[in-house]
Length: 536
Image (cartoon, rainbow, N blue to C red; front, side, top):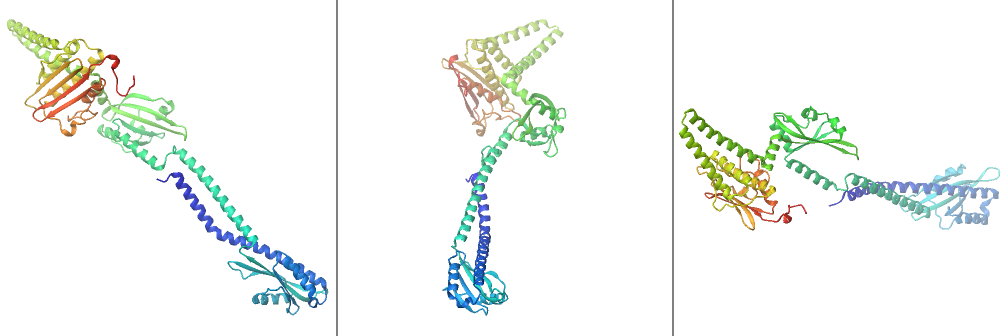
C-alpha cells in the first residue's frame, strides 16, 4: 500500500515536471532568441567599426587589398564574427572571407538597403541545429558619398558556448525548482500526517468504521453533541431507546435542547465537569443520563458526550449482581405462604373451632421445623440454610417440586464473600430452573450442594425442555438468554462468581432428560485466591 507522503510527493513532482517539460521548449527558444539578438547586436557593432575604419582610409579602398585583408582578419579574429564580405558602390564583391558564401536571398535583400546607405542586421536561415546572422553597414567617403558596403556574418550552432551556458542555467533552474518542490512536499506531508496523528488515510477510514461498529455495539445509548447543540452521532442503541420511549428522532431535526430541555449545554461545557447518573424522563421511560464535556485544544473544539441507560435495566442489573432479587423473591414467597396460612387460622378462629386450630398450628409448625431441620442438618451456615428454606417456599408458590438430595452436605460457616457468591449462584440457577418449568406437566427441580476436600460443587437439575444447541456454547455470555423477556444477566453473573475462584461450569441438556447445571468451585486457601486479569 502506497503511503500518503509518497502519493503527495509523486503527485506534486509529476505536476512540477509536467510544467517544466511543457515550458522547457518555449523557455529554451526564448533563451536562444535572446542570445541570438545579443550576438546580432555585437556583430552590428563590429561591422560598424569596420565600416568606420574603411571610411577613414578615404580613397579607393577597393584597390588596396592589403587594407581589406587586414581589416577582415581583425574581424575574423573577433569571437562575435565568423566572416566578412566587402562590396564597392555598385555592390560588386571586392573581398570575401575564404569559405564564406553569403545567401543570395540575403544579398538581394540587403543590396537595395545598402545602396541607399542604410545599415541593418537580421537572423536568417534559422534551423534546429544552427542559425546565421547577417549585419550590413554602408561605407562612406570623407565627402559623405557612398563608396561601398560591408557584410558580416556570425554562425550559431546548437553547441555554441553562449547557448550551452544558457541551457545549463535553464537546467540548473529546473533542478532548483524541483528541490524547492520536494522541500515543500515534505513539509506539507509532515503537517498533514501530524494532523492525522501519523496515520494513513486507509488506517483512519478503518478506525472510523471500527469506532462506529464499537459504538453501535455498546448497550448504553450514546450521543455526540457539538457546541451548537446539534447531534453529530447517535448509536443504534440510542435510537432504539428513544423509539421505545415514544420519542423517535432524526439527526437533522433533533438536538440537545429538544431531548434535554432541562439542561443548558453552555453551562455544562463551561463547567467542564461531568454529570453522572442524573435521572431524567425521556418520553415514557426514565433513564440514568451522563453528560461528559470533551475539549480539544488543537484545533480548538468543544463537544458533549451523552450516555444513558434505562433505569429499569440498571435496577434489574443491580438486583442481580447484589443478590437482592433472590432475597426479595424469597421474602415475597414466604409472605405469600404466610398469608395463606394466616387465612386458614383466621377462618378457624372465626368458626371458633379451636381444637382444629390447635391441630393445624401444631402441624404447620411441625412441618416447618422438620423442613428446617432437614436443611440445617445438611447446610451448616444458618444464612444459607435460611435462604434455601425461602427457596422451598418460592418453589411451592411456583407449584414446583424442589428436592434437596441426600448427598447434599455443606457443613461449617462460610466466609462472607463465599456466602454471598453461593447465594448468588444458587439463587440464579434455581430461578432459571423454575422459569424453565413454566408450562411443563412435570415440574421437578433437584438441588445438590456437596463439599469435598478439593471443591464445592453445586448441581441444579430441572425436568424442563433442553437448551437449544446453538445457544448452549455461549449461554454463559452477557445478554444470551432462552427466555422471551430475559436479559441474559443471571448465568453471566453465575459464571463471573465461579471464575473468581478459578472454577468452572458444566452444562448437560438433553431432550427428555432435562437440564443440569453444575458449578465447580475449588477449595483454595485465602492466599491462593486469584481474580482473573488482576495480578495480586
